[in-house]
Amino acid sequence: MFEQLKREIVENHLESDTLLTELAVAAGYSVSRAPAREALKRLAAVGFVRPRRRVGYLVTNVSLADLDEIFAMRLVLEPLATELAVGRLTEADAAILKRLAEGVQRVEVAADERGRMITKLNADFHREIARIGGNKRLEQAITRLVDELERVMHMLAYSPTVGSLLEEHSDLLVMMQAGDPKPAGELMRAQLERDYNAMRSLVMRTPTALTLVRPAPES
Image (cartoon, rainbow, N blue to C red; front, side):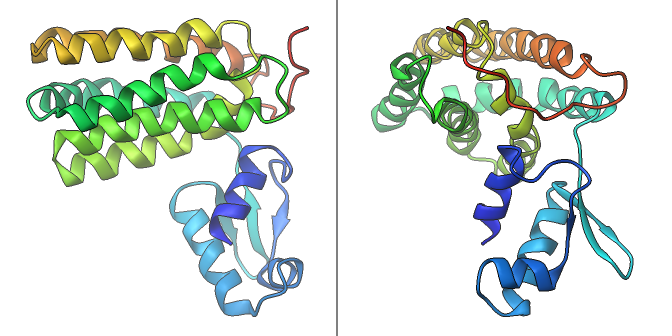
């Protein structure tokens, strides 16, 4: 249920400030209130909803301040994770990263599932590098930050610039396989800075927060 509710928020089926109650969620998914309560608590823990006392939970938005804070952390943590991953990268790990990096190029521009597919491929690529690095706390922190940006990434998936941004994953993998941690970490940082600029431009379309309305695919 947690994953289903999260997907509805990421894909804007549940818009910002939508009120969710245990009773309504339980009824909607034909379950008791206990699993509904647990799912809402988990969503609150990762920032997708916020509690409203004696009422329920409100779906959050993604503000410019949120984006700035998230990338301030990612720009420190992910280059470090990349450097750690270089020394631990196996052939099996490289094969997984290659599949994720090349997967973006196989997503059709007008595919109905484009947003979901690109968001997942991007998130899985970053999570996998964090996992390979071998530092569990670092992996958990990065996973949380990547999760928080899924809504913005889903929007960006319909932008004409997203292909070039995500194709950089292949370049990063080549650098990691070369075996020199420092340049790989620097490339990760440069790629994250480009992601940040693209997402910031998207969020700045409204004065205070991201309006989560899915744009039409490019023709």
